Length: 279
Image 1: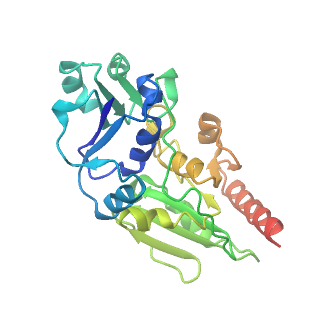
Image 2: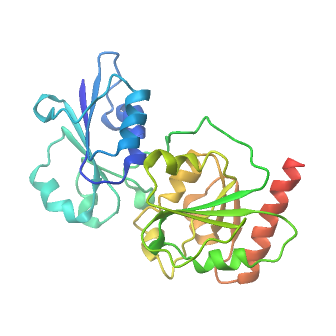
C-alpha cells in the first residue's frame, strides 16, 4: 500500500508522526513491510531533518498524488467542507481540527478531538518521548497560540509567594503581552519544530491555560493541542476542572478557574508533589 500524508499548512507538524505510525488504525488495513509512506508538506527545516533521520525510507515532497492508494489530508476545518464533499473519495482520509454538524456527516473524516462521539484516534506520538531529563526545579509549560491562552493566570502564578523555586515556560506563536522574569518566566516565540519540542524533555507539568468563558470551543468542538502534548510527553497537568472532566487527563492537579485561591492552592500542591518526589 502506498500512503501519502498531505499538509498544506505551515503548522500541525506535531501530528504527522502519529499518522506515520498509526495509519493502519485509520484505514483498517493491516500494515505490511511493503507499505510506502511519503509526505507532501510545507517545508520546515528542523522537522524535515528530524523525519528524514528517523524515517529514512519516507520520501518527502516528491509529488506522488496519482500513484498512491490512500491520502491523509491532515489540516482540515469546516471551511473545507465543500471541497471535501465534492471529493468525497474513500481513498482520501481527512483529519479535521473542529467538529461541526456537517463535517460529522462525512464518512471519511476523522477528528483531532474526542467530543460528540466522533471518529477519533489520539495523535500523541511526539519527537522526544523517550528523552527525559531531570530538572533541579519543576518546569511548567504553557504552549500554543498566545492569543488563545489566559495569560492572566501566568501573572498570578508568577506573583505567588512560595518557598519553592519553579520556572514557567511560554512556548508559542503570536503577540505576547508578558515580559520574561529572571529565574521564573521564560518566553519563546516562533521556535523551529525541534527546538520547540526539546523544551518538553525536562518539563514537569503542562498548563492548558484556557477557560470556558474566554475559549468556549475548547469545551465542545475543538481540541486544545496542549492535551496531546501533555499526554504525549507524560507530563502532569495543572488543569481547570471542567476541562479535566472532558479529557480525564492523567496525573492532574485540578482547580476551579473561578477561584484564585483554588488555583493557588492547587499550584502549591503541585510544587509540594514535585519536591516530595525529588528530595
